[in-house]
Length: 306
Ligand code: CP
Image (cartoon, rainbow, N blue to C red; front, side, top):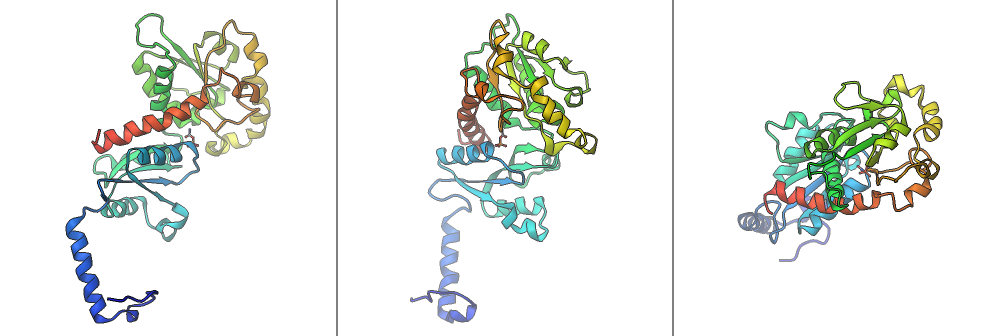
C-alpha cells in the first residue's frame, strides 16, 4: 500500500490506509513491551538545572549498559504548558521509561514520590538538599585511591572546605562518609557552616589543612544564597581566595599535601588556583572517570538487572 510522503491531516489517508494502520499498530502492541526493544530498557534524564558531569555520565552509563536514554528537555517539554512533575513522570512511565534521573532547584522535590513512585527515580541533585550519586562516586574514588578507611586503625579525617550550608554534595557526604568510619571536619566562613552541631566545624583553614588526611573543596553556591547573603556575595567572592582558596603557596607550608577532591564545577582562582587544579594533588579527574562506573552500578542495581 502506497502512503503519502507528507502526512499533514487525516484527509491525506484513505479509509483502507487507516484500517491498515490500525491493524499494524495492534500487531506491534501484541509483540512489544513499551520501553523495551531488542532487550534494551529505557531510562530518562530530566534536568531542571544545568549540569555537565551528572547528566552526561548518567547517559553514558545507561548507554554502556545497553539501555536507551531519553533526555527530557524541560524548555521544550509540556512543562512549558503547565504540566507538573508528577504528570510528566506518569507519562514517561506509560511510554515505557522505567527510571529517571532528576535534577531540580527545589529541595526535597522527590520526597513525596517515595511512597508511590510512578517510575524509579534517582536524585541528580535537589536544591541544597542532596546529591547521593556524587557522594557514592566520591566514596568509590577514595577506595580506588587506596585510602584504607576500614582497617579500624587511625580514623581518616576528611575536611570539607567551602559553602557547606548550601551544598547538596556536602549534605550527602555528611550522611554517607561517617558510615565508613571517615571523620569529617567542616571548614569555611561562618555564614557557610551548618549550625546543627553534628560535625566539628572551623572557620580556620590552616587548622583544617593541618588536621586533614583528605581535602574536599566546594564552590561558593551563589545561586542558592538567600537574600541575607546576596548583599555580601561580592565581598565573599573577593575575599574567599585569600582566606579559603587552596593555593600552591598555602600547600607548600604543609608537611604532606593531602589529596584534593572537588565535585566540580570548580571556580579557578576562587576556591582553588589553576596550579593546584593542574597538579597531581588534584583528584577531580578521577572523580569524573569513576562517575560513569558508579552510575552504571546504580542504574543496573535499581533496574534489578545486575
Ligand atoms: N558534580 C556535579 O554535580 O556536576 P554537574 O553540575 O556538572 O553535574
